[in-house]
Length: 251
Image (cartoon, rainbow, N blue to C red):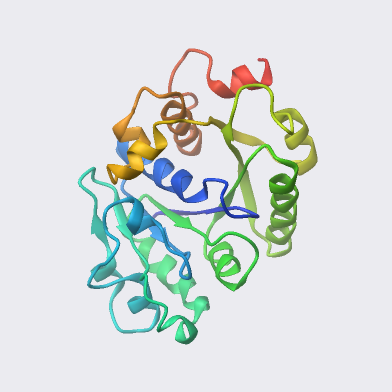
């Protein structure tokens, strides 16, 4: 039975989608059967990032009742499976976002992990992704605006009766950040699941239509993603040496 995890964020531009893709790819590299589902129906990016921008059957078709979920699953050359959403806006108004729960129930039977890439913010699409999963991971940048929005998101998740596995602080540039990691942890009152450094190789990975953990496996960000995936599985650290999060927190 799969564990359903929604990757969400209070605001856009924090690297939520790249985080979802790389965590999914890292879990897959650990031998787990992973499906990354693009629950951001309005502005989907998973398919764009992984070389499947236009597909015959998308999540939209499934939610409209025009296709089976099995027909909307595509396998990336790396072995990670994805369910892209359509770039078309024609059918958006007719989609019942509440049906995402039914999709999750069906996927639970055919994978080890299903990663929902949620829409940013607290709109209907984002709420649907929150309600469809077992637990959530909030992505933020070390900036006061992003962290404030992450706090709002955590409160909504709490009201929905869902649990937050932890927070990923993304695109960190050394120790000099607008908000120190310790302050973020204290403000959100949530565990820091991982700290991912800004990585110049991310753009190259996007051009190559693959996850950073595959294209640049030795980069600090790729190692950070693998550490996060290891924590999700419960295997501790990916590498024995001090991780970036240890460096940032001064451990």
